Amino acid sequence: MASVGFAVGLGNIWRFPYVVGENGGSAFVLIYLLFAFGIGVPLVMSEWTIGRRGSGAASASGSVREVARQSGVSIAWGNVGSIAVLAVFMLMLFYTVVAGWTMDYLVRAASGAFQGITAERSAAMFDSLMASPLRLGFWHTVVVLLTVYINSRGLKAGIEKAVNVLMPALFVSLLLMVAYAGFVGDIGAAVEFLLTPDFSRVTANTMLMALGQAFFSIGIAMAVMITYGSYLDRQMSIPRNAFIVVSADTLVALLAGFAIFPLVFAHQLAPDSGTGLVFQTLPIAFGELPGGQIFSSIFFLLLIAAAVTSCIGNFAPVVAWTEERFSISHARAACVAGFLMWFLGLGAVFSFNLLADFHPLSFIDRFQGMTIYDSLDYVMSNVLLPVGAFLTSIFVGWFASNDAIREEMGLADGLAYKLWRILIRYIVPVAVAIIFIANFVG
Figure 1 (cartoon, one colour):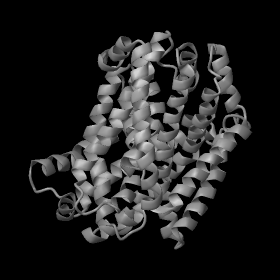
Figure 2: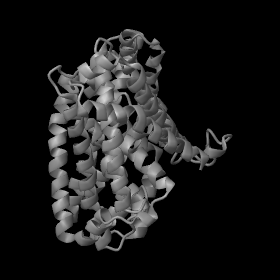
Figure 3: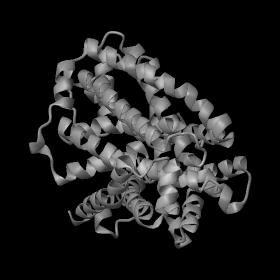
Figure 4: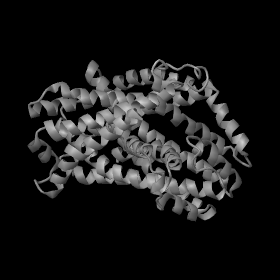
C-alpha cells in the first residue's frame, strides 16, 4: 500500500492528462502502457529485489553496495543508489511547490471562487498565485512540514498509517469524479480521445514523453522502491506485487483521464493546454456545471491526497540516506533533510516571481531560458532518471549474482524468470539508451 501510495500521485492526476493532451491522446496512452509494463514492471521487480537482498543497509545506495558485495563485484555500484537519491531529492525541490498549488486551489474551490469564472479570470487567478512568493512559499512550507512529520514517525507508524487513510480516500474521490464527469460531460469524446489510437501523430518526442511519464509516474530510479524493498516480508511475492503497483498506478492515470477529458470536451476547451489543464482549464468547466463547487472541492481534495502520498514516499529514501550518512536518528534525519529541502525548494518557489528572469544554466544551450524550476525538472526527468534506470538494469542483469536475484524474487528458473532476465538485460537498457540519446541528439 505504501508503494502504491508513492507511485500514485500528481504524476497520474495532474501530469498524465496534460501530457496525453499534448501528445496525441490514445496513441500516447498505448505507448505509455507498453513502457509501464515492459520496462516499469521489470525495473520495479529489480529495485525491490535489491532492497530486500540488501536489507541490512538503511539507504538505497547502501542496499546496492551490499548486493554488489554479495555478488563479488565492485561496491562502487552503490553510486547507482546515490544517483537515485539525488534524483528524488531534486524532484522534491519542485514537487512540494506543485503540491502546494493543489492546497491553494482546494481553498478557492470550497469558497466558490470558480462559479461563473471566465477563461480570462481563470488565467488571472493562476497567474496571481504564481506571482505571489508569499502564497507559494506558505503552501510549500505546509507540504514540507506535513511530509517531514509523517516520515519522522517511520514506515509503520507514519507512512503506512497515512496511506491507509489517503489511498482509499483517493480512489473513492476519483471514482466519484469519473461518475460525475460521465454524467455531465462528453464521455463519448473522451473515450474516443483516450482509446482510439492515431499513430500518425506519434513522433520520437512522443516516445520520449511516454517513457518519461512512466518513470515519473511509477517512480522508477528514484530510490523509493529500493528503500521500500528493504521492508518487504520474505513471504511477499515481488513479481505479483510489482504488477499490482504498476497496474494500480496505470488505472489511476486512466481514470484521471476519464474524470477530466469529458469536462474538457463538453465545454470545447483545449485538451492540450499543458500544465494549465488542471489549474486553468478545469475551473472554467466546474464553474459552469451543476454541483461544480462540491465536485471541484472533491477533485482538488483528490489532488492533495495524491500529492501527499507521493511526497511522503519520495522523501523516505532521502531520510534513509541522511540517517545512514550522518549516523543520526531517523527523526533527526527527517528534520535535517526536511529543512534543506524547504530551503532549496524556495528556489523553485521564486522561479515564478522574484527569480523568473534568472536562468542558472543558461551557459548551456539546452538550458537557455530555463528557470530554476525548469532546470530541476529537466535534469531530474531527462538525465538522472534515465541514467539511473539504465545503470540499474545493467547492474541487476549483468553484474548481480544470478542465483541470489532468482532466489530473492522467488522465481524458479522457468519461463517467467527467463522473460524477466531478457527484458532487464537487453530490452530495458537498449530502449532507455536509444530514447535518452535520441533526446539529446534531437
